Length: 315
Image 1 (cartoon, rainbow, N blue to C red):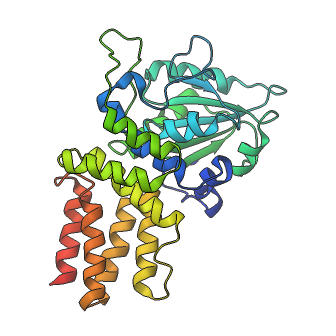
Image 2 (image 1 turned 90 degrees about the vertical axis):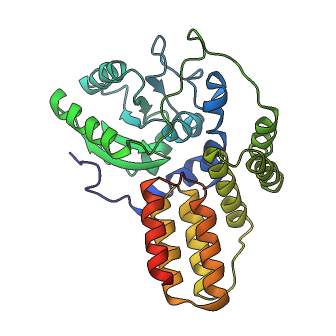
């Protein structure tokens, strides 16, 4: 059994979203940009259980195929970990019932997603699964841990606890039930317009609208974060910063890491580049780093570390 953090994701696993969603970064961009909706109108937040949810299972269990993978796994995994279980109706195991019961007990802290490998072999191939049953923990659109075969309940609990600890504070959290008492369908026309542009793939218009929102609501870090993701996604999709040299290379790497929600890695790439560049090049790198830092609260531990490292690099 593999514990979170013991096995770094392979290159193929890091491209899982690309192989199944068809566009590496747009699925991540959409989910990140739509995240502010959770604070504005929980009942309309993305990733709510749709037609693929198991009957009576609510938000804790869902059946997934290649058509529903993006919404039910990639998007939902930005809110809570999604535990994918690869199964075969030809060889059922007790593991499915165990995980289903634990998911119900967790009450939305994570989602149990079953994938029938005979119906959706592409998902198993993308995950490089070697056996059935196999279980993969997905968070932020990326595999972070896995194991093969049936396990005792205590071992399952320990593994799930480790996944929750590894993702604590890094995801947006469960989406309240839209039918729950007190859930209201509030509207935010400006945010709706920005999200609509993004959902249509119009990153230029989305950037303009999110920029206007940031100007009007500078203290809302969720909107600032969405803007930075849109900007990075536009640069990646337009293949900006394609000039040769270490500075464009650092900017490209930081954009890719930002879209993948790897803030620490993006900060490190830029601060390392600041250390070895001077003059205008250093200013370009410093400006980009400060823009990314604005996306997170000033007291975020990652921001505090990055600012200390930037100060050390500069002085």
